[in-house]
Length: 293
Image (cartoon, rainbow, N blue to C red):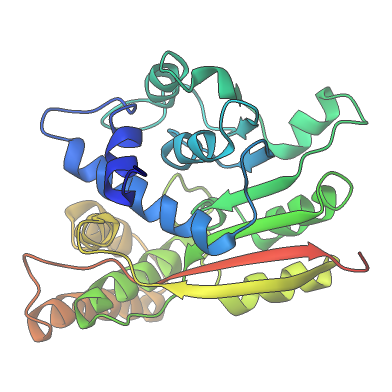
């Protein structure tokens, strides 16, 4: 008898390094990644996957489950081993490596450019994946360079990023918070935030097409209520750290605009009556093929 999606998500979540009472949070994360991978419909048992921006491995574990014992995931992230909370990258990735799917994953502490320079030139993968990693890039040039480099390495690129669209009214605070955070980070010279460059789906699509990729399919996903990313981002924008950074902006017009954005997040929470149940905004998923194939 086949197991349900909920059972699969719970099984994958149990492989993650969990804080006390953290299983439900990770089940929601795994469920979301299962939906993304299902929507792409490109990754099969036995697939060789190159994941760019793997972080602590939320998507990596789901990819490893999907490719099965005959597939493999090369998971890249340039962040230092001590990055991350409540667990560092090194702790979270090490826990997955010690699990029953650990031999399906190889972790690489490198950017794509660094990794490809060190790898054998003839190595290829079936699919490259960028799942909720594009907003971390320092600039659009990073995405341009990655997509150009991938044309010689894979025939398919699968992308997932927040859509800047809120089907659920209770996701509007997340949408507005993302715009506020992206605007603030655009006025900084250095950033370690999870939104460093605020790409829209249209911008990502345009960059992909300009670098030699053709859109094969795309879709919008509405995350389930248990996915807490929207609540986390909203809380960050309403926090004292964000306010402090805004107050340090020297351009008064920019500072006022950011203060207005922060106020709009508060207003959205009040009008949507969602202070305790802020939702996560829609997610755009897309699969691109090398143009000309």
